Image 1: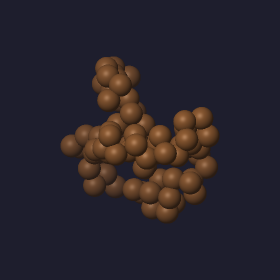
Image 2 (image 1 turned 60 degrees about the vertical axis):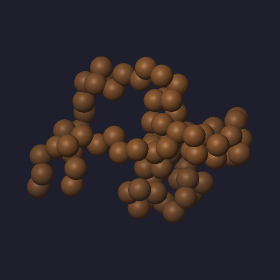
Image 3 (image 1 turned 90 degrees about the horizontal axis):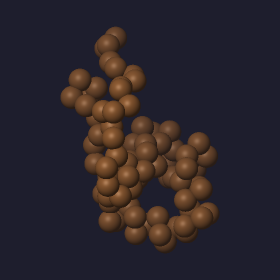
Image 4 (image 1 turned 180 degrees about the vertical axis):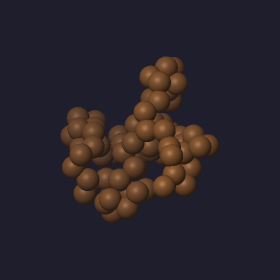
Length: 80
């Protein structure tokens, strides 16, 4: 059983730019797929993906995913 941090200090993840914001949103939306919970973002109901799809549109979301690539935000001690 690994001992891993679950909660981090809020100031460790300060979002400073629009690019950083949307990159992290994309990361969050992709999490259910990354962890094998769902096969697509549409399939996972516990996400803001549906709110963005309904308000901004799926074409806007696709552009956002292409413009702000998903990166790995895990911290070294949190990697499996």
